[in-house]
Image 1 (cartoon, rainbow, N blue to C red):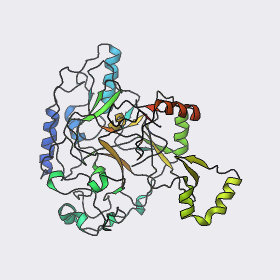
Image 2 (cartoon, rainbow, N blue to C red):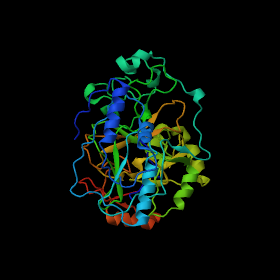
Image 3 (spheres, one colour):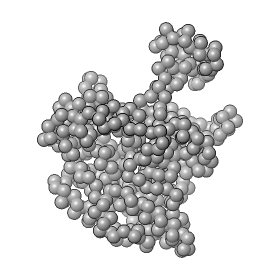
Image 4 (cartoon, rainbow, N blue to C red):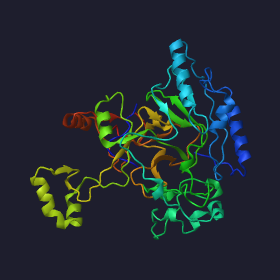
Length: 435
């Protein structure tokens, strides 16, 4: 998954239902899901759209190996607080109207603490928007697989020499690993091989011959589960799913405005700590700027003179990290783009941090020729009961060491900023994490 300097600061399941056999059955299930929510939270003020039109617009692309499930969230002792003042009611109406622009299952909002609503200066989008200086690789260089259409759903591209899997990760036996399970008990769920790693996911694309019902198409269809943005007790707004999620199930993508690194740095410099920086780096296929001296001598012994020249010219200053001297990496490849979810994005923008998260971010590509842009997709790392807050690790690194208050103060003195205080409350809490 993505990692880097720009991070968002803080501000089990039953088996899935059987696959739907026809598109009419999926449409019926979805309309039943909507009609069962007549007493929706925050439904006292409705968007100015006809409900039938909203339902028709939000019916997602069919995914044969998944089916909609009806809401089964435990009932709350106290219902939502209805805004009393005209200003609060207007803000809530504006946010709900904005929220209605999303495709897929209806996203709800719940607040039983006060009459506030999520920020109205946030625009919900179904896909990330490209900012100035950001470009996707042209479709002309996208290559699709030549698998026969009948092979897409059964037996599936995973049993063939599918070109879309050519760059997929290898297991210990040297075989390519298909990302999604085809077993009926967990159809469409991400396999453990991926869940327990940071391997990139390649899905079939619009130029593939296998068809839309191919089992190697999942994230590209968008969110397929009902989500709810809700007010937490001490961490602002959070996100939860209204149905049980099984291990490996796809939830939704992280979206926003994709900008250049230079633009992201400029925006970050102008935002206060209270505002937060909702940045995600597209750095999956990059190489770090610095490596240890030990690794340098092992892999680049012919670059010693090159490194000495860089140091002598003031282009690089070695420093120490975790007891190791860090040298400039000759294979350094910087990342170009950053996803800014501050003012636009999807419901996952409201996911909070946890040192013991139940979700994880994975990178997903459709165009093998584009290593700079791809989807950022959240999957459940374990079974998640309905109504459980969805969280992920903002730091997303293997280092799990605890950062004490004294160490945080030393960082503030050295670097000029205080590490973020963690409020996850789990037994794995690291107390502070770096942004």
